[in-house]
Amino acid sequence: MTLKQFHIILDIIIAIVVIVVIISLIAGRDSGGHYYQDAQKAYLKAEQAAASWDISDPEKLYKLSSLYRKVFESYPNSRWADDAIYRLASKIDPTEEEAMILYRKLIKDYPDSEYVDEALYTIGMGHYGKGAYDAAIAEFGNVISNYQTSELAEKAYFNVAMCRYGLEKWDQAAMEFQDFETRYSQSDLVDDSRTYRGIIEVNKGDFDSGIRMFEEVLRDYPSEDSADDAQFNMASAYFEQGKFDEAIAAFEKLIAEYPESEFVEESHIKIGWAYEEQGKDQQAIATLQKVLMDYPDSKYASEVESYVAWVYLKLKDMPRAIETYQKIANNTRYHYDSRKNAQYQVGKIYETQQNYARAIEAYKRLVEEFPKPISTPDAEADKIDKAYIINLQQKIPAQPTASI
Image (cartoon, helix red, strand yellow):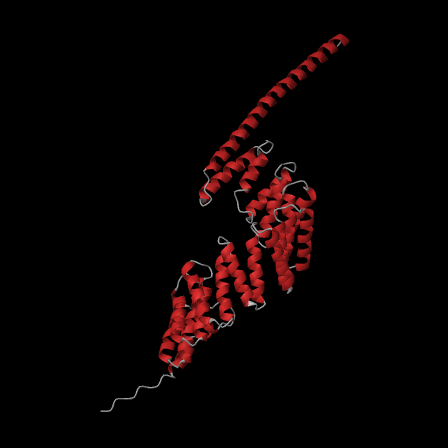
């Protein structure tokens, strides 16, 4: 082969290679175009389904999950993959393990995503919601360290203090709340931070410092959402000290000035308790009965009604005490423990009165209708069994035989 022929063959090979490369590039561009178009279509389909999503329908959640997963599993290199992960994760309660797995996948696979700081923060909130405060602190710390300019850094800083509060590390929590107030002096959370510092002082037994802190919140932030919280905790601090006049006045102020507060119902209840502590039993009963009337579905209803029954018992008004306890025992909406204990109290009152027939009747109901033990160990109600009833029957005087 001559040198000229060699160059001709080499030119042909180079031309073929160039053509192959061009064809590959064109095919690649076509493929890439379809890839991104298909990814976008898949994402838009998921978003359309999300618009009519119903949180109470597990089937719809499963379908929605499949649509979003198709985006980030089939098109992981598309611009919509991290969006799909974030959108799906945000549909799930952050305390659920599935949500945490999705957020961690976003952080790991898409470290440059605009959602990384929010993913870290939400994982922290998930841990916080489960009471795993140390794990939450670690996640919030990542937000603070790596995303200082993020809007979530402020909330993360506050929530670290909240985690210390949850761990009951009072001194450390107070210090971190104070640091937060210094660092973010214009934050909307400053009033909440001061309120929690007041609660911490009360928890440490320094009632005067706590009350002063609550008064500062009420003075400086009277219209903020923490004002009623400060007012309620100030009233509760007076109550815990046995300063019942001050407590009643403070609870009544909360009711008057913050009628929409979540603490209104509990304030009414504590006013009733304060009256009882002052020996104003009839006033206490009237107040607590009004609570039962005004809040029939209250989560405190069984506790309030049990307290009323106890006051009747203290007053030696046995008929009303029995009536109230039996009403509690018959109320299937109440907690099992409350109902069983109330049924026991009915039997105990009759037994104390030496009305053994009625006591036996009440105890039989106790054994038959409440066979499971109470959650509190060694509860008196759990000590009543068939043997106890048989022994009680022996105390009933024998009926005299009629003479012929």
